[in-house]
Image (cartoon, helix red, strand yellow):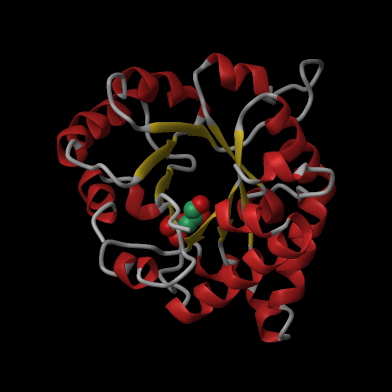
Length: 250
Ligand code: 13P
C-alpha cells in the first residue's frame, strides 16, 4: 500500500510572530505546486494562530508540540487538548525525546496523552527512539518496543491506523549525526512489525512512520528512498523556509 508521505516541521522553542509570518510568506509560493506530500508545521503554542491564519487556503497541516491529557483544571503552564482543537490543530507531537529526557515524561504519562489526543480528534505524532548508551548496549530494539508497548496501551485498532509515529534516535537529534538510511529503515521496519503483531495487517499498512534526526535537504532523498519510511520530522532544517521547502522535493 502506498502511504502519503509527510514532511513535518518541529520548530521547537524557536521564532516570534514576525519570524513565523515571514517564514510562511516565503514558504507558500515555494510549495504551491506540491500535490503528493503532506506538509505539517508544529510551531510553539504562541505561534499556532499565526501559522493557522497564514496557511488559509492551502493544504498545510497544523500541529502542536505537546499537550496535557486532562480536559481542564489546575495545571499551571499546561495546555489542554480542547485548546489545541480551538486553534484548529489537527496533530500533536507526543513523547518527543526532549519531553522524555529533559522534562522527565514517562511512558505512562505519554500513553495518557495519546489516548486523550484520540478522544479529542487530534492525531498524535508519537516519537520513539533510543539514546546513544542504549544503542551501544545493543538495546535499541528493546527500548523502541517498550516505548511502543507502553505508549500505545488501550488504543483501538481502528484509531491506531491514523497515528503517525516518528523514529527519532536521541543521539541524532540536533547533532548533525544523522542515522544511516539502513539504521532508520531497520528501526522503522521493527515499528511496523510491532504494529502488525498487535493491531493487524491493515493497520500496519496504514500507519505512517517517519524518521527524525538531523534531516537536511542533502540527506532527505536517502531516507525517502527506503521502503517503509513515510517521511521526516525535522527540527533545525525546518526553521528556514528555503531548506524546509527543499525537504518536500525528494
Ligand atoms: P533536528 O532535525 O534538529 O535534528 O531535530 C529533530 C527533531 O527532534 C524533530 O522532532
